[in-house]
Length: 117
Image (tube, rainbow, N blue to C red):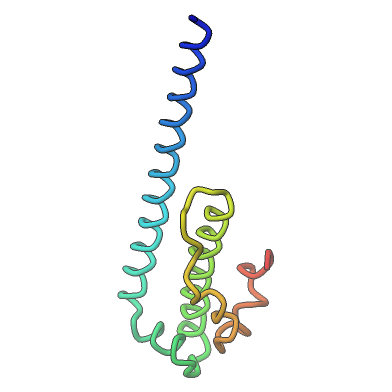
């Protein structure tokens, strides 16, 4: 009887630990999304050009555009990994499937951010 109660207790502890892990993962995903959104707000002019496919000026603007795109790719790559690991209920947005069609992709691909893709 004691062994059964112990196993029941351990099972409940594991379940609670899993819930805490899922909650922490969801909070981390939200935090990274909010950080990305605040960064976009700081560089809205560059981000508008990235999203609309307008040509970025060589130098600082192009570097900023690639960095912003890399941030977005990293956020969604992390979400995809967390979804595949079972920590998130929904896969990343359909936006990910179209992101490789953006003109900035060709500038981003040779950077260090594209080494695992």
